[in-house]
Length: 65
Image 1: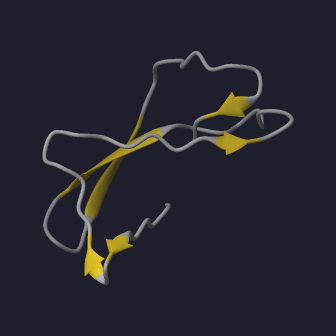
Image 2 (image 1 turned 180 degrees about the vertical axis):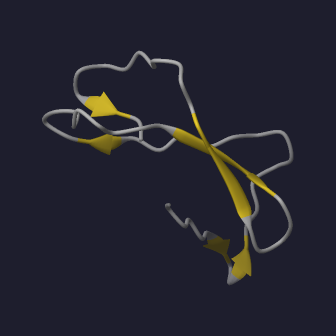
């Protein structure tokens, strides 16, 4: 899990509704058993994580986890 917190002029920023963010983690190789998950908020404290079965196409320099 990755937590991203952003502020401007000491005011917290929020991602616009309906928008997404992509995070790239550089690596020299993809680990064999790495899985991709997506999450949706069940409430303000819990995320329901679901493993994604679809293979993703990424450039050789980056893998999305």
